[in-house]
Image (cartoon, rainbow, N blue to C red; front, side, top):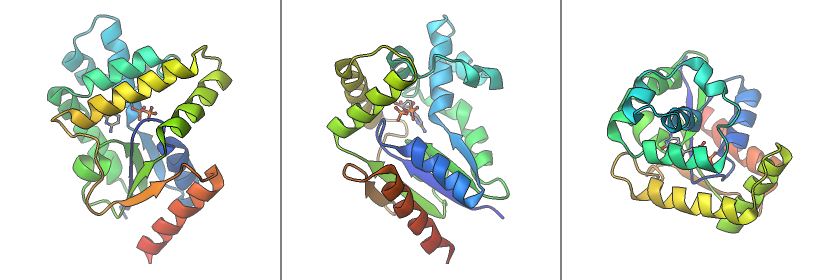
Length: 202
Ligand code: CDP
């Protein structure tokens, strides 16, 4: 039986952490759709044209170890504004969303474009300061030498570009549950998300 949890929200709001926790809790498959755009953006830095990069994306491209750098984040957000790039990645995401056994997808347009019929839609946010602090800590812990200022600039620029674009802009679905995690621990945010899914499953 298909059951889709759609998680959207601005950069570094905690979508991935909540998505992974929900997938473990409910035994659902998880797709971090940002990786598709990051891998596409990464390939354009090697000289490929964006649409070709998306159309010929391979599974191993998602394993590159530098997909989290601010440079690749920016490239991801630039290619993500191109309708043909989004189109090339659409079928894979839709099929994943409706696979048997349940799926959690996190991104920007999951509840609005990829899977408007999702059984649960969450829009996860946190204050700009808190998102920059969390992402900076995460990057430092994974060995990336970036300053808090660089992280803040990356988030600000991407949120502005992702919200302003015409193709599948970042915005909550009308029926999304808003989850502001600024003042929440990871455990509290996950518990709130689990409760929302439990309520929908009945
Ligand atoms: O992890 P973070 O929230 O910083 O970003 P991400 O989810 O990995 O997404 C990287 C970029 O890909 C975003 O800034 C968007 O431009 C783009 N993206 C998108 O347009 N649509 C999605 N469903 C997921 C990501």
